[in-house]
Image (cartoon, rainbow, N blue to C red; front, top):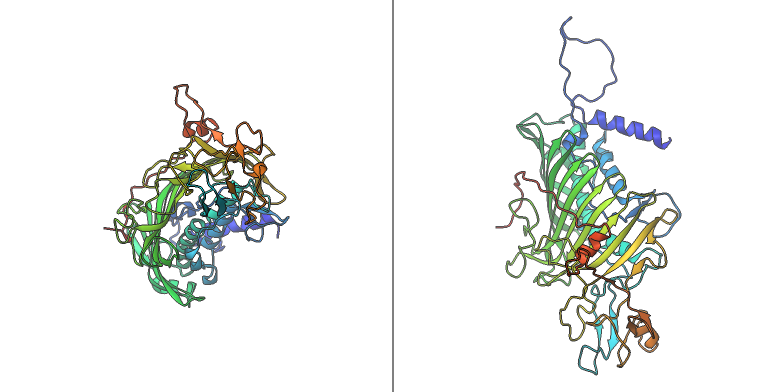
Length: 532
């Protein structure tokens, strides 16, 4: 069957599946009174009941036609955004319980890190410390170190994709679990709830993922105005690989509108996290997503935090994950990773403004930040910036500057007025977002407080990441501007864009056409788990 035929059948299935009376295909005579006009039963459009054009995923993520993540292969590709929204729509249009499935294992996904970004790095005789000294700079602190991954993917794209793996899968799990409720209600003939009422699917939903899921609550409510849909899920998922039970709750409140919609998704799941800041490995994943859509325009903000202990609610009374509720001030506050993804973009082209920032611990003074602009081009093109910004407790998506030696000896905590930049283009053959050309990256520096090293000392560091310092020379370790010996210092410097005598990275990046995205708001009530 050709793609166009599948698309037509798919659109038909959605229209029928989400209509109150379905599509019988029967054109026979009416059994009503002769001569009396009957008012047809209203239909419920999918966009009224559910945010069908919504996904949390890196704009640089591409998937193969089979749905597997791209590593290297010459196959057909589609954006991760299209892949996720298509999967959600497929569940919504399901016509049997077997098609009303979702994968609860995705709630337990974790972020990863690209090899080209933030490597551990051996050093000796670091100039900012007391010489002699030896040590290793920890992982995650070095920013973009290599221009590309071994695959040829631009490091900014590879790291953003890796960082967002966790929140992307978790949000998809929450969205598909709610979509499965719509599917189940439709298959069992109970869709939709009447205005001002709820339908209870707790018993009906159990076959969806049995034997690994047991539902405690599964309800769909349509408010008295007939415009706000609230989906509540509470279930226990037992991971078959470990026999570990995970308590999970999901709530979606979606306000329909004639040209779009707005809403809030909240999910909470017991999990484990080894090596973090909490007293034990027991943590609770708290995630929220607030969104607004108008036509193809999408505004969203996703928040995700790992809170100490099981059963820990990191969500405020507004239904959004609260970064100010942190450990150790609060015993059940967040103690491990916290991330915020904010985006304003077009869902068809992905053109727009994106910011992803994350913080590894509650006491860090700054967050690590990606600011990204995507153009409305085919193939996709854009520009990615990396640096450091305000902690996640502050509502500021801008990059403020750069730390070249975040955890090195003698760290002064003085932010330099630089950032890293990569101009990128999607290679449609490989499915990888690559540096646009040989001059597309500004990433080179030395891991010192000054960001440079003139070679006058005995400092060595493992620039080539081969786990030995014996082959390092002035040609590999010296970084100056201008370069006389060694490498050219090449970070992007802040500029006085406004002519007011002040150069800031936020203004510099905005002058490149990449403004900080703004988060939407949603005022609907929240009834799920919340912290005191």
